[in-house]
Length: 232
Image 1 (cartoon, rainbow, N blue to C red):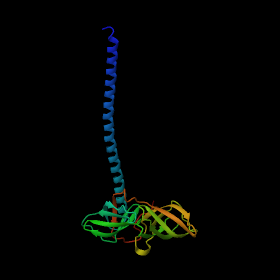
Image 2 (cartoon, rainbow, N blue to C red):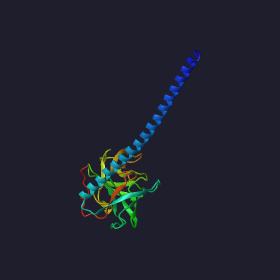
Image 3 (cartoon, one colour):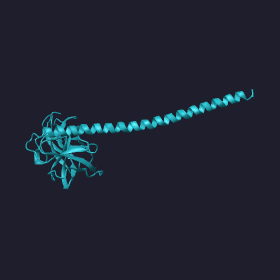
Image 4 (cartoon, one colour):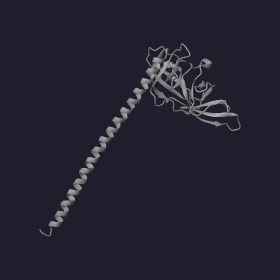
């Protein structure tokens, strides 16, 4: 027995060691599962907070305007590189028709067709779309064209001598009766010289992200050029 005592002590030590490791591994697994649950809850709270901020911005926009506005929620979006559209749902009793504008605090689109409580909206980033805009800083007016990529637009036929800088904010000018005056469209992200041309190559990023933002307002009429606050 005396000879076996060291072996027994060693075996007991191993048992305690591996039992401790097993217990630690078990607790680690439990803590990891709890962490995953906590992460999901935090993501849900963050998403809810973003949605509340978005709804608050829409409410403030509605309060600042004299026009009739109805809320619409995005239920589908195009994944085509050639067509940029959203499908939105609204109250079935809302007096909405083709040609009305889809807006939020930072962007716009136009309704192409409706079907009961849903509407198909063409975004200004669609390569077939264009909009007359004005540089908020200088008042310079030009035409902005869709690029076919979500969130990217091109300001074409602008001479190099025109004062347009990165960071300039573009708003709708109201020319052409396509959109009301003063709707924020986007910001200039780059200004470069066109090769073998006297024009500048100007890229604009839309202020709104139609893929991540769920709620917009549908503007069914506008009574004056002072539709939106341009404080920002």
